[in-house]
Length: 458
Image 1: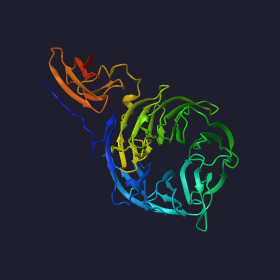
Image 2: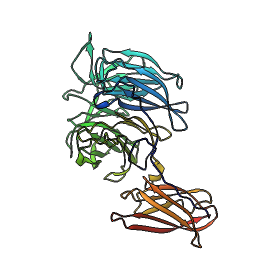
Image 3: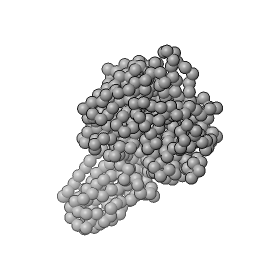
Image 4: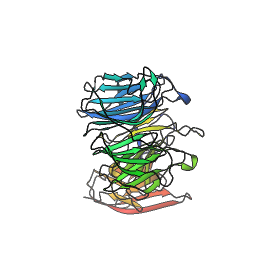
């Protein structure tokens, strides 16, 4: 008799909670100078060249570079010390263009550093540093096709003296090592905190002034298109991301207890909130950075870790999570997951945690590409002998269930218990035939709920 029993556990040295997300690797360095509350890390970013995937992580001291191995491990490659390395460093931002990484910081007497990545996986090299125009910058966005760099919340210096804050500056980087200033503005608002730009259409996150939309086809003379400055559950408009098909925009308000807003975008670039979703908002939790596909939103949600939402329904549904910050915290709600990067070709996900460093996570997107099941779905069915098939349960239930497979004579040939997930990829029986698959789990009253269906193997 072929019998099999498996328990799935999270791969971590401390009690992280996870649901439909697996931890592949984690990197942290306690030797780095700690900031307030023992925090050391800020944003992360990904990069791909010559079939290899890389990760970058900001810290109090600078930016760390890693190769991501085919065995799902971070391999440290190099480190670039920031022009300002200090415990007070909270914000470092990293973006890439061609074979260069652009590094900025928003504390102290910092600078813009441009790093040549062409020598990866061996090393990286700083090829440009400017500490006057770019002394402090909060965030960058690079519109690669149009060779424009959007520097948000810029504070220049003159002879070492910091100057007043500039809401945003836009630079041509067609000559990478000679950025040329094209635009300063927009006027009438104190800051642009972050930006997302595609096809010269810029969605600017302007803090308490909401979202502004501009057309930068003429970078020196952008055209104002929209002002989305009033919406339900409005807070500090922090950052947002546009879907690849251009029809969805998801943004986060960095305010205690605020929600993530899932929006539609029409041909005139008008934004309309379709639905809102949050994670334990009643406890004052705060969403931070967002990246999305046409189907899913990946949110670095501070103390709540990574949250994954299905954004196809009008009201988004949480379908997965991984808690990068399992420590109990009642006073400070902005200690955990800061940055997220979900655009690696392998679909592995990078998440930076302010205290616990860089995480490499796996979320199986293909399992959730189909519509949300009412109860249970099984696919493919029929399946092939000695192959695999997938069982997926409805999203809003406890993440543990038992699967039992019986042949036509009622003999159990397979059994497995699945935890921390509402799906499982299972081995098909070795012989062709019709099999009975029983799925069971406890309900809210701890009474067994069970469903049985046929699996055809040909």
